[in-house]
Figure 1 (cartoon, one colour):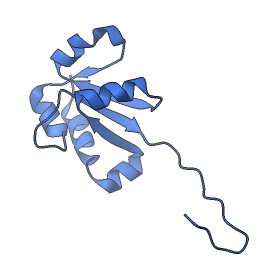
Figure 2 (spheres, rainbow, N blue to C red):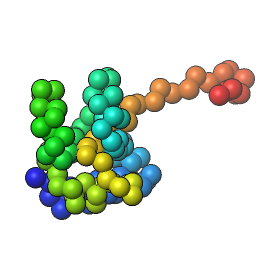
Figure 3 (tube, rainbow, N blue to C red):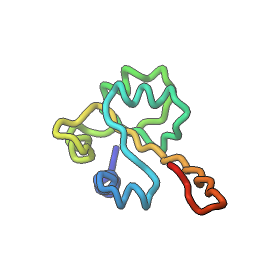
Figure 4 (tube, rainbow, N blue to C red):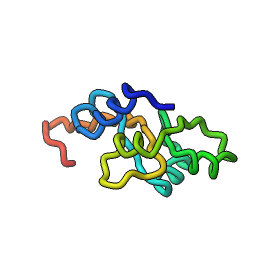
Length: 105
């Protein structure tokens, strides 16, 4: 089960400054998370309702079970989804600077 401290931590990631500090962002929704699982993005943690966990038991992915109320509190949306993922932000490579001091981006 998910604790109150974790719920508050995930709520804080709805703000840009906390996402930048923690280098994490939230992905919500069944379809988006399923696509994320199949990608090469690094998932830190999944939180899901019991129904979603049961339906995806064959995926062998560690998931913390959360109640509908907890998912609603964690969500940045008006209606909570069945699953929420915390995803690590990739490191951005430095832009190559031109010798004359101008760089076109």
